Image 1 (cartoon, rainbow, N blue to C red):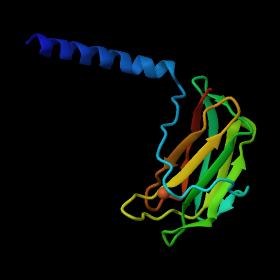
Image 2 (tube, helix red, strand yellow):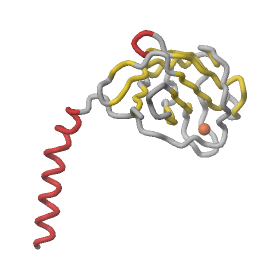
Image 3 (cartoon, helix red, strand yellow):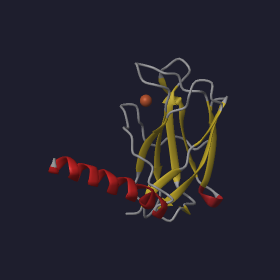
Length: 151
Ligand SMILES: [Fe+2]
């Protein structure tokens, strides 16, 4: 009975702190996700690796949300045939307000994995971030902010 009471208390505290903790951190760091086996460094600078799916967002710094200009954003993904190729690797530097955008082909699901675009983000004074975006079938655009942690 005592343990059950403590569990209930812990749950109540967790529920009470949850929203407050979130309010103190308007820019939670973007969750890291696996790199996978197909990353190759040095993706060429460009803003298009296909047509029909536009990804836009901003690189920001946690916890202040300060925009990070000049961050290097790299992406790579499967082509419409479900294979990774050099045509679907790109990189760019963020501009004013940390903003970036690029257009690409919609990534198909493959090998039992849902559609996804891989990202790596590098910025001075921040830890490198490796993550993934998971668009839904039929989606033509996505907003994807990338929030980095300071070193
Ligand atoms: Fe992948």
